[in-house]
Image (cartoon, rainbow, N blue to C red; front, side, top):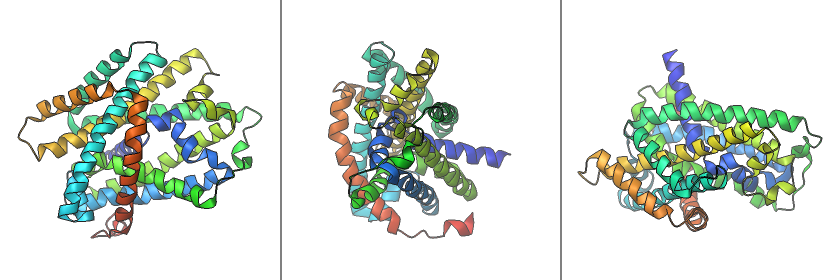
Amino acid sequence: MKRWHQIILVAFTYMGTIVGAGFASGQEILQFFTLYGRYAALTIVLATLLFIWLGIKVMLLAKDVAASTYEELNKVLFGPIIGRWISWFMMLILLGTSAVMLAGAGSLFEEQLHLSYQSGLLLTLLLAYLVLTNGIQAIMQVNSFVVPLMITFTIIIVWHTWQIPNHTGWLRITSDFPLAKIWFSPLLYVAFNLAGAQAVLIPLSSAIKDRSVLFWGGILGGIGIGALLLSAHYALSAQMPGIQQYEIPMGHIIQRLSRFIQLMYTLVIFGEIFTTYIAGLYGLTLQLQSYTRLHPKLLLGLLLVFSYFVSQIGFSMLLSTLYPLFGCFSVIWFAMLVFKRNKVHPLYNS
């Protein structure tokens, strides 16, 4: 039972790191999958297979080379010199995306809960400090709470969608996009998400001693990500094309349900923002500890303060500036990961 409990924790941590604010809001699924019509179900299957294969590969490759930070893995993928430069760039990206998540929390408090932007920032900072000072185990516990909530609300949304006349829209929607763009989209989506997720997946592989736990956790987590993707696509397709006009498409679907469910789903979105925020900060803290002799808590405090000041720029501005840069980096990192051979094939040591 202890082994299966660890597998579930690994799976939930993997899912929680991937399923961020863009996923929970529905915007990522809409842009990367639903807009491509009936092909989307097939591209989601492709993305799911990639999440399973490459999620396992990241964790077991990190285990093979005894990597505890993303720089150590990047040196294996790119070589010692380029790997160091890649890691510095990764550090800047994680600093920026952490600020994006923090700004997203502030915007959520302001727009959905009608509280001040600053109150959302400060509460998120406080919660992040309390979790991160307790290490990877605390991150796993947070995800074990947030991810089941996300799954529960996804089931509610699917059940609601099944009741409406256009629930078969996911099988009938057409698309004018070229096939090359349609099939590149899931590759970009997986690359973008996995490149950021390595900040937690690598320390996770270091903390879990049993390789089989990482292997089966990667399988379960990848399947879970795929199931959530397909469920959200099913719900969004039933609302096409009108759903495209909303900033938070899933929020529009939830509005048709009770006020209580709307409030709870807003908290779920906050939870997903929070898990992505702490994932990035945890990876940064571990990485910076190898460069400086500062106490980990002081280093964490400085990172939190930095992300607070950068978040004052605003959610939309940060998102539009940083994410295209991260996308370019992610594709290069993804290609290196795909073609890198593990020292030991994961199936042989599962």
